[in-house]
Amino acid sequence: MSIVVAQGTSEHSERLARFSERVSFRPAEGQADREAVYQLRYQAYRRQNLLNDDIERRLFDERYDNAPNGCSVMMFIDGDLASTVRVHIGSEPEAILPSLTVFSDVIMPHLQAGELLVDPTRLAADLAMSRRFPELPYFAMRPAWMAAQYFNADYVLATTVEVHAAFYRRTFGYQLWCGPRSYPTVTVKIVCMAAGFAAGRAAVEARYPIFRLADAECERLFGALARLRLPAGTRVRTAPAPLAPSRLAAV
Image (cartoon, rainbow, N blue to C red):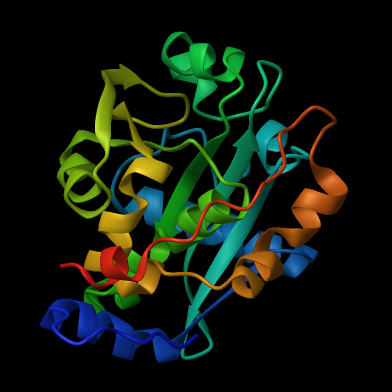
């Protein structure tokens, strides 16, 4: 991937843009890909003491990893697997979204209103790469932003440990939807946050040009999901209005 930054962009954004040349994404499609994803999740969650003791070697959620409205995305740095995130799309009360497990009272009214939600979960990163590359967290969340653009989402969710909430708020303008609650399979409490995509898109893309996305890039990750797997009734993307150049150049 290659990112062009506007004159006057911050040094941090320019560093992210340069780093983007080393980053690539693809959906986890074959069994080998999926096993690599499950093992990376397990290793990342286990080293942070986030997993219950009864989970061994791989972190696989049958209901969600096999759901027709979701897919796992792999991120590579210099060709090596660096992180993964699972992305679900839903716009109806029957949608299979992992975050509904704990926060249904908060999320369900939006689905009942026909709003389209992107639900990224099971975000995990390789330990050595996360220590070596401070840019990694920004790129790890990029697939969720791609899905939001491709499907013209209303909100992008985040169910995360409270200590990470500041990053989501600072980077994407997330707002807290619900305070800490217990979450299945993990040992810590999780908060539910959401970012309004249409309202926050211009500011995010101006501050971090790596989140300005080409439709072709989004199509490579989510085109098959849109064409083949989403259940009937799911609202599929309608192209959002382009952002004005003056807004893209703002800092």
